[in-house]
Length: 270
Length: 210
Image (cartoon, rainbow over all chains, first blue to last red; front, side, top):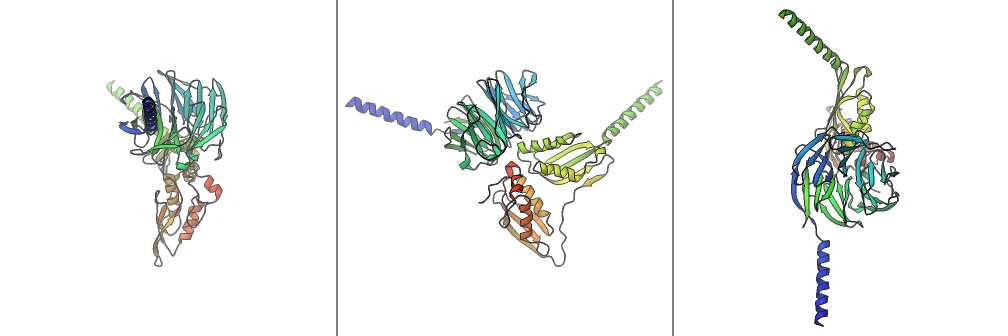
């Protein structure tokens, strides 16, 4: 009987701990000032951060603590960037191309389709997805075979100026900016789910998907919305945010590109 | 010999200056004050839209101040209306437009100024106007101010109220309301045509009352 009570106690304690884990929230840690830079896109590589500074046509390379190491100029409106195997992939909105930046070299990503203002790219495990802003579509490649899906509109599977894209959990997550929502697709481009409609966002401009959470920037409302992967709203971050455009998680740390605030806001789970 | 060198250098310097003047003098300088450049995605779109003007150079865009400028070949005689139409195509509102011609002449857009008479009666009224952002604000205010009789117009993004001062002998709240709706914004009294609403930039497509 005593062992039975002890076991029951352990189960109850475990359940309580699980509940507490689920309710853990992101808490403010610090702000990384970027001077005159206007961060639009973020990526991480080898423990360092890279920031796309759209207004000043440059990339900014920071160490893990947020210290600026150098700036790489000469990009035409760089947007939501990505990294893969030592290269930074830069959607150049003003040049209608994806530029691959590695060391001191720049090459153009070869695509059969032409882009009209690429606004975001994401690369992971051999998959590459591109948000093609003025064409209202997503380009997706799984091991080199490209498909495109979406057209201008408001129905499921249609877009109104997609600005960012993320692949995770065998799905493609799209920041459907001016339809004010997130749409989720399978690798064939079939619509699976829509998230965020009840929050009445105004311009869902940036997206990031972690193991268990989905983050989206609500640009005009100066906030970040955090959902679980089923679309249930978990947390809203708004303090200090002015027109956020992108989110990144690196080393269990949440970084927010605070476009008009000209800084990165840093959060940790507490 | 020294004098000869001085003369040669002077001639070369003069030739260089003359060439520079000629290089500049074949281009017009265009300066536009654009309202509502808050969203980078749309602002960069404005820049992109003007790339359709073949021969455009020296493009500068300041998101903070809304200053947009470029140079253009003088022989193409780009007009104020063409510039303003192109700004509108990108979804923005040109508050003021100025062209400094290559020969120094200046052309500027005229803003509507209401002239008051002895019969004028200034009335202050607020009206609800749907909209979302800084671009909406610029469009709504410019449209209202262009109605003869309107003295001032200020729209608040949070309350959605348009504060109007107008001469009731020249216009009415109904007329202003209709003009604002024609620009794509539903008001308490008038509804915008669907196709005009659908042509608003993405960030301006406010939620419409059913």
